[in-house]
View 1 (cartoon, rainbow over the protein chains, first blue to last red):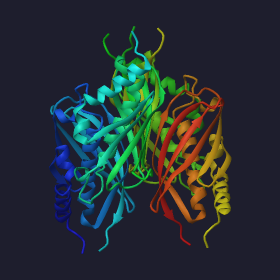
View 2: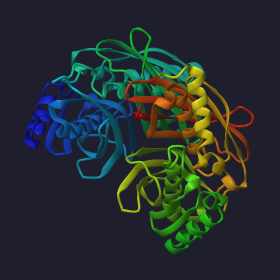
View 3: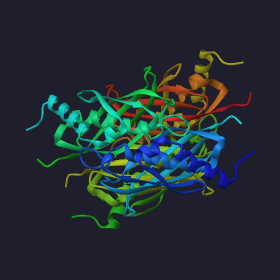
Length: 141
Length: 141
Length: 141
Length: 141
């Protein structure tokens, strides 16, 4: 039987709790709605590169987490979502503080889901934007 | 005075050593040559998502590190390299074991450096490919 | 002497008029504002592939034109803008009729300009979204 | 009944012949093999922008054509291939002369095909590189 919106959102939330990578990276879920997810990461010493700014791998990790979560709120437990491709443009360097990523589903098709993400710093200034395509793989019933 | 190739490569290596993020993610440098860098990451429990595969943020982090390192072998201490944008296509899911990323400079201009990356699993099978554009910012002398 | 906003917008408009490619592709300017451009293309037989849908090269052409025009409204005659990279996600196939692309500047830096684009069909439905990075090259005074 | 490699390649060739867009853009097929296609375009006045270089929309059109053709040599008449997303990095400006794009299939899955493209100028210098993801839609038997 197919899940209700609330069940799908609860699944998306529990999925992040069951993903060890979120803890390792320090990524936390702030809010989840249908097709939309806001995640945060507190940029700490362990996220920096030798120039004192967040390493180029930090924001893509947060971005993928936000976009995948947004997509899971629509598909719930019925489907495994595999990232097919993603891109990100870095508008400003991030040195410290909380960054928030808002992932949104742009179009959910039968085979793929297209998503986008905005990442903002603690002042609400946009620091990165990007998108991703996820392949939908139905799970065995 | 401008650096020799060996000095630039040594700089690129020391830069990774001075970047806390490499330790946090478990990224290590295997080899550095002019315009080319091979980095590795041993996929462990802390890199996985709730479906037991490497989270979509792991490979972009390794990719950015490999491409940035490749570019730094050419620019050395003279320039700070800022990721302007990157993309990655995920060809196969990664569950465990060592993954290696080979970053290469495709073209180094005056304003930007274009790079590419191949990521392979422990069997040498290609699991992801992508690229990035870095902005070159000359450091104060 | 630097140009006024109106002069920059006039420059962006005249630039498209001086670009033979716009005529060949059937691309027309609908409106130009500071950091924003709306361009249109009437999808005709000559834009189709053998499956009767707009060829995969049509929308990127319109997208690049819209994003470049948006960027030129800010830089005017003072700079040559070179596309460094672009991407596009195709949300829906286009068969016929007018498509409109809205290009917007997301961030204009000293070295590069980041832009984005939405493409909609005659019904206003989103059919593609993407972005681009342009390198700013100051023209000789 | 499924097609032989030669039949699939013949299909890929005939498909381009049935695509009006190829004629409009001046794109011609040079060679087709399994998973690989070389296409050419003679950069003429109608491809230029007001700065006298090939408009930013010309190379993506050639790129998409080369990558789609490469993918069709593997799928033949059995599937319709829809571009899901593509990206391109522009390594050098093109002013005139023949440009050749080599499209290659990187990985053909059940749901999507990943491809890449190199574009070179008349001297064989690389001028652009990129990639694309195509969605595979089985045609009705």
